[in-house]
Amino acid sequence: MLHLIKTCLSTTRHQQKRNFYQNLDKNITTFFKQQNPTLWNEFNLSRHAFTNYFGLTPEVRNFLEENIFIKVKRGYIGFDGNTTPGYNTYRWHPNILKELVENSSKQMNKRAAATQLLTTDNSQITAVETGFKNRMGENIKLLYTTDENGRLHNKIQHIPKALREVILKGWFMYDINAAAPTILHQMYTKITGNELNHIPHYCKNKAQLREQWAKAVGCEIKTIKSIINSLFFGGVIPTEAQLNANLDFKFSIQKLLTDSQIKKLLSIQAFGWLREETRFVMMTMSNYYRNEANTLTNAAGITKHFKRWSYRHVCYHLYVGVEVLILQIIMSHLMHDNRGGMFLLHDGFATPENLDTERLGVLVKEVTEYEVTYDKTQV
Image 1 (tube, helix red, strand yellow):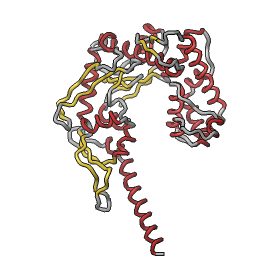
Image 2 (cartoon, helix red, strand yellow):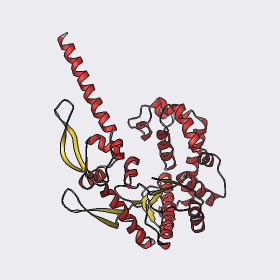
Image 3 (spheres, one colour):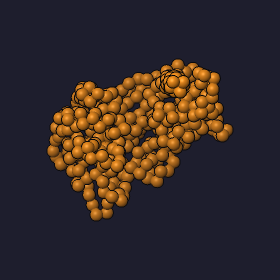
Image 4 (tube, helix red, strand yellow):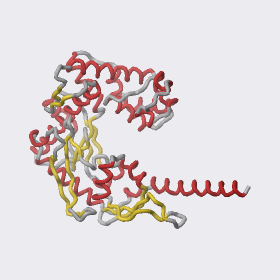
């Protein structure tokens, strides 16, 4: 009996502590919204929550811990007075990120020529420097690099919305509306002359469809959005037979939904049509561009050799080429008009300039023949 009481107390204490830290981790979003932009700020967060919150690779996480959220103390004093391993104290100044973003946007504007932007060897594109020092006492720098498809990256592109709102306050965010399916549809039409049904239907009704499917499956709308985005980039969604086969590996979607939820999603007719049409489009495009050399040059002029000709990788390479080409056009437009710079966010960008989105669409179509529309929001 005494052993049972001790076990129950221990379980209750463990649950109490776990709830305490879970609430602390959740409060990180509120923390960022309440930052004083002129002061150094400190916060305590578990390394696990830090990684989950920023959605980071180890490389990006280490960059942030050394340069942006500078780890100043290991361990955290919990509610019971004991130091809890795995919790760190981080110190940061909002102006570090703001200065990096502003300086990088100006640098990217100056280097908008294709010959300066596009390389295929993961090389440094541009480096920006701030007056802040990192943990090693060096001036903090931010690098833009390109991957083998031509997409531009830097280590703070994936910062969460709450933090982005702190550093980009007053700026305007521009995103291509339904970028991947819109461009995929038009690439398919250019090579076949045929129109599609389900992909354009999704583009026109994406908000309503996501809400309906999330309700039917029993998950959050953002989860459905992630699954659909993955689908357009070649993500694999297992069949019901595959789910029942007890395979010795897991599909990516199984990290987001339970097997029963996946089966509910598969049972939705409209989703099934979208899934099949997307796969058909990708297979058609892959077969059209297939060649003995297994090489392919995308719209941005990046040539890639494929060890294995995969329709998923081929279509991603083609899509990114159009994405990068569109960003080049926008950058050149901003530079030509002597406007402020831009901070790249994959298929979108941020700038202090209030641009005419209709004009942006016309500009893109004039140069690329692709029709895209932009969503604009002010931070």
